[in-house]
Length: 193
Length: 274
Ligand SMILES: C[S@@+](CC[C@H](N)C(=O)[O-])C[C@H]1O[C@@H](n2cnc3c(N)ncnc32)[C@H](O)[C@@H]1O
Image (tube, rainbow over all chains, first blue to last red; front, side):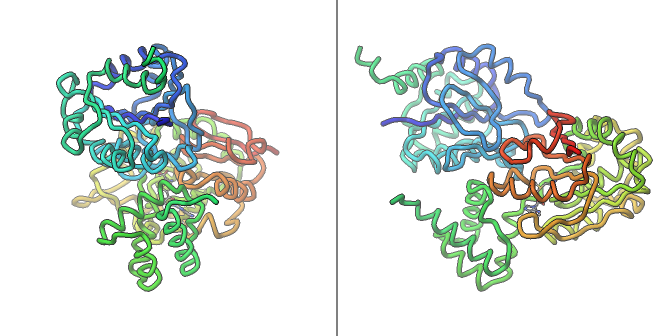
């Protein structure tokens, strides 16, 4: 099965988790990645620039109406919800906070599941909130792949544990193994070599 | 033939029903946004299918008005994005000072916090007495609240911080009086604000103005509708007038990019060319 997009939800402890993830993904990684990281509403885009410096892929804030393409890691802007339309473009909204969060992981995941159905990969990483649990459930309902960071290895176990309580993930793995799995999915031939 | 998802068909029929019956046109709004709000309402009402809401909306005006509230997101703040208001003070106020009379249009003003912020800023800059602020929305309930000028004091601390960061010259508390859990905005701020019901999708040019603020409304529209509303704005602005969009909105996907010069690229402030 060809996977068309990866959505990732991450909260407390997210910065170091993203650094690991981004530094291990190669330049030619061929599936677009879309991330909601819980943030202070007043934070500026500086940290995106920092992450971009450490990444082989292009890390950028998701713009409204922007078309989603491989080679990019898109990050939800602070204080907006990020959604995906069926034509694979972004929408931003300033609806109420959801699970105390804006951007909310559930909001991204649910719209992404609608848009990408069984070609979507959803990943829940470290965090101290239950945001993402409903979203990953929806991804599974549509036949997508659910990956959760092994809570034992997460800086904050609560968010991955909540996801595991909501569904039976396809994989529960430490961060580095998640990257290895993604590489295998992106390039299945390398597996048999 | 392309097979649409059943729920997409149901949604488009429901929006068609709302439009034909009540004249509110949501057919070119962001589909992901509309879907999320409709699914919420569906679950809250205990329905299993979106199409069940169709007969409800056609036969029950109360239900229809609930849906209308669901689809109109009135989340707003005073001095939201302080850096924007700072830029407004520095780059737009000097332009406004050159006019004997000033007309400002807040399109999609929700419960009015943005218009009150503008009134405060203009008072501090000595311009309010020669200004008329038209604050419009298609949500009458929100407009009624805006007109009252009474806000919950839960957010006031946050607003004071915003105000200070935006370059406010006074103390924010001098602009309201406290009353139990609420604050009441000063009467002097209200006097030149005209609150009016106007629908950006279905109504025509509202007035000829020097400054338009339409922030965090267009993100809910698809590209074609954004373009149509930008045409309305272009026709409403005098030459040399200023257009302010939300911090994540732009003219990029519209035909009107060439009609403006950027006064502040980052804060999305544009000046209409002569
Ligand atoms: C999220 S609020 C933005 C409020 C304020 N401008 C701000 O940025 O804080 C969006 C507002 O747009 C209004 N709106 C949505 N569609 C509209 C339309 N077709 N015509 C007029 N107002 C509309 C909604 O009712 C809502 O009050």
